[in-house]
Image (cartoon, rainbow, N blue to C red; front, side, top):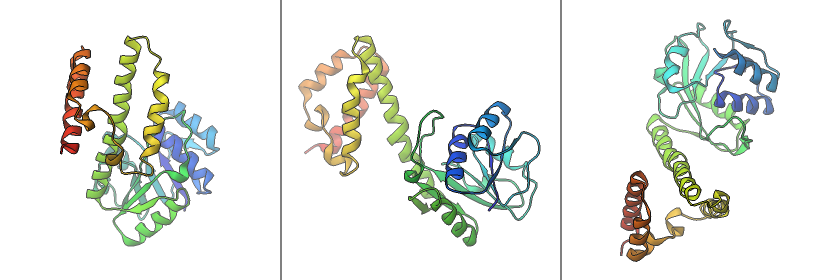
Length: 250
């Protein structure tokens, strides 16, 4: 299946490499940012263009959610398969007389981070049964974790990912601020972070929760509240402490 990736950001950077490593017939990279496209092109040895979109069997739009609709209008070909990688939008955001689908990789993509593509979950939602089967087989060339879902499931997966990734990373940033303000190397937090992440691979997160809120330890909770001078950090502390206490109250 002749494949074109549209976009030049972090998702395109990684999926281009995943496609090439899996033997997928990636024939073009297309987008607006010539410098980024050139860098990806050199990485995977695939030609790029900012003007002429070649005819292919499958076009994967790897752009921001705000750009997908506009970008989708630039695909002039009919009876081709077009998908986007958004975790929130439906396939109907695509505007064109072609077959439409979603091809959602559940991962946080940063350009300079090495990823094991075999472990990344890919979620498929196409308008036609044959296209669902086609994309399931396509994704299985890349990953060992592939699942067919509907739009409602995809939205819930994205929401769960915001809690599991984006919010957690923000808490890391808050923890680093506390460390920096008190001249404590944040590096000392890494073994704790790693152990916490490893525990939930084999356990229900609820069953391995620790800390003063889970213990209903009001003395320590009050002590820590008094340590927090940043009003946003105090608000975060209070909301999460309340949520944890409710989950483990007797």
